[in-house]
Image 1 (tube, rainbow over the protein chains, first blue to last red):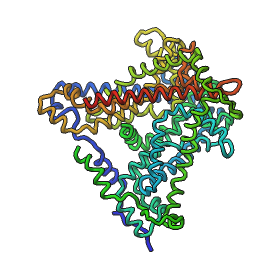
Image 2: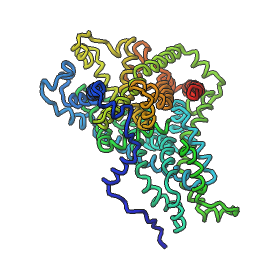
Image 3: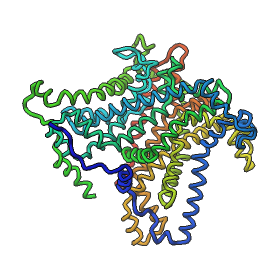
Image 4: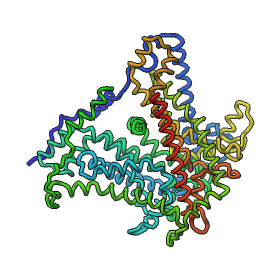
Length: 317
Length: 321
């Protein structure tokens, strides 16, 4: 007996991208009408906005990062005395290797990657299975799950900080999770937001596909793996971005859980110590290296990032 | 509007309540054979993680705030923790500082993203480029941002910002080393780090404004400014209300900037409530005052809950009027 569900042939990547774009609620007009745009004053205003946006955003958004990139390969003396000059005494590439090897940024860099990858797998697995149960399988207790997840959205993070630390440090059952990556992964995976955005997407999947699969004899796990997940790639991408970026940005929680074992700490947690113990040029090189992963991810998945950020607003609103 | 209202009913009609048909037969074997066990296994990771790391700590927060504890022994002390916290002379300073931070963050950081989003949605070219640039600071890890800005804020005449000020003839400023300038400096960095996210959210909201409304306004003879005032802003009202309260909740819990920039100094001018909680719990030389820390967190959370409840009641009234 076969359990394959025949879906229409998948369009190519580029075609799908086009399709995505046409589905986006891109308004065909904004405040300005075609008629408005012909006016001279409006045209001048447009040019002014361009100058304002371009200048402002390049200086404010890109400027600090460009400065960081420049100073990462400048000498300390140059950064201290002529911070805005371009390498008056030459480029100092040695900063990067000093940071990577002498300050062991390399080691902490891989800790960061390991924490983010583990977080990604665990959070996504938990969020996707929970959303699947609540949206598609709907057992009788699904309503309670949903209410209990929603309720956690209204509890500010501050209430949880200390009791969560106590729970992780001295759990009622099992060993302490301090100085263990599980102490970061599991509490962070209890995230209502990820579950809700995935559930909302599952809610809109065509129900007939699941019915057909059931008729063909597919069980809940088979339907999850072969239907729900492949059909939900867009939202899984958005959730992945949320999870990984949150993991890369987190400071307070990893610093509390891993405060006892320096060798396990991610780069972000080490940076304040590095800053107080090393020379300025090597510190700046370390800062530049830590910006690298999120920056590269952003450049590759820019579209997913921006759509996700907008979606965040839609869910909040 | 009618389409949206009809949709839930439509969906419910098209869509049976559950895939697993529920039968009167409730024997465990039938339950397993119908996939009940698999369903439970799929639900279990989430239930366990939420129970252990969300629901249990919430209950524990309430319980712990009435205990004196070193994590090994627990002793019930009634409301002593709350009294101790309320008698702490730093608490008043921390509350005032947190309010100051929140107000400054609203002034610096609230109108600007709306303005930027409106401008960005009206230019034809480079829209994607602008959104990417605006979002760039958001992806920089906050630790990196704070340490980088510490360098920018160097008080010497050759500090980055002081050099730039020098170009226009303004004398060097002490920035974070001065009790009066420290807090605005922190807010400036926090605004830089957060504004991009708000801009993208407003952009998405602007795209959702139905173009027919602008057409209708034009037929009625509205110019650009009146379209902004009478169409755009009212359409954004819901998002603006939500963003406002979310920003207040977020700034009430500000921690990283005061902790890494100034550790609360100079002269306690940047101690915030969350920094105080952190100090109670994790910086005591004799082990943490966990009870007092939870008591203060609980008070902050209750205050935030009340504030947002009142806020939603009030804005609901405005929205319906």
